[in-house]
Image (spheres, rainbow, N blue to C red):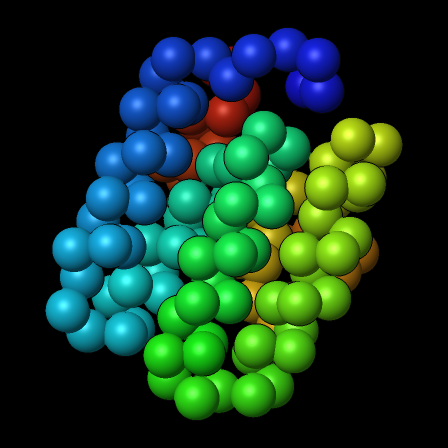
Length: 114
């Protein structure tokens, strides 16, 4: 997918999840939208998503998550450029850097058509 622009349908879904995350008033709702946006973002705007997750971790004073996001910010860009990222990963610090995760059906269908 590197070198290919993000398809418009995928970009629209990504933007919708990021808007929903910004508009969410509850941290868990914000986190869920950021996780969905992260799945959609691989490999396109992947690093940007980790920066938003880092900001949420700082706002919540969650040191473990903030540290995990710093690590992910450092490895996300090179990993995406090399096509090495775990598909379906929510991007959280509790998620493995290399282990794929089950993907929600609606996102799997969206990305299959990309």
